Length: 288
Figure 1 (cartoon, rainbow, N blue to C red):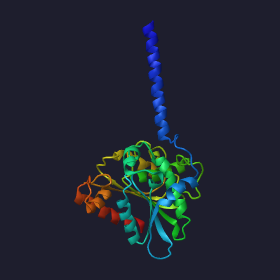
Figure 2 (cartoon, one colour; figure 1 turned 90 degrees about the horizontal axis):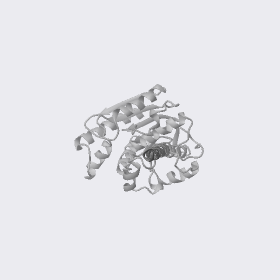
Figure 3 (cartoon, rainbow, N blue to C red; figure 1 turned 60 degrees about the horizontal axis):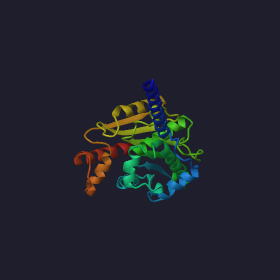
Figure 4 (cartoon, helix red, strand yellow; figure 1 turned 180 degrees about the vertical axis):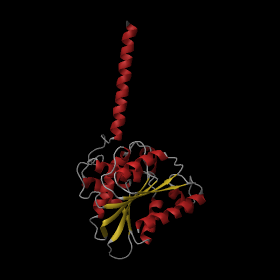
């Protein structure tokens, strides 16, 4: 009799623990634990740390808003910002870390591991940047492009998925002044499409032209996850131009920039540099 009671209590305890763990996990994935901020408060985190790369003249310029990966590599963003400027576009590096006090160690241990600042929350940074860009005299208002790398690409994708579901980004209490309706072109480098990516569950309401640059043997996210996400986007009516690079890994362009600075890289040096040059040609043609 005692054994029976003990077993029932143990079963109840284990069951309750499993339910609590599942709810906690769901709360993280759905952003239920993210403190609510107004759009202005989110903008105050993001806008002071924007870096603008702009050609000479008054514009208006086609403007590319750039969202870094979870590594927050500034040299990579500087390289792409200067490149876009040389092509005649304005570019804006949106630093999601500086205003939150996230250093490289915290980014590596928290953000890159999905413990902080998920794409669904950082989607608010996307809308804050669009709202800011629409207020600049030099921005071509109907010609704003979103460009993201890995975690930044995830954030862009989640912004579109949340829009389709009529949801706000995690931790945002009200709509931003500008939404995604004016965005007609999106560029995604090796996006994170895995667990917690909303596009896998929800297609997009809007139909921007989408360019994706993926790698065949991505060590961060499986190829099938992104194919499923792209399929959802295509079914929503968007055109997807996908390019898959062989011989390099996730963040190959970070590696290519790092080669010039003598930093450690994960992709073979020659392959990384060649893939960066190839990616530049593809992106430039897409944006023309």
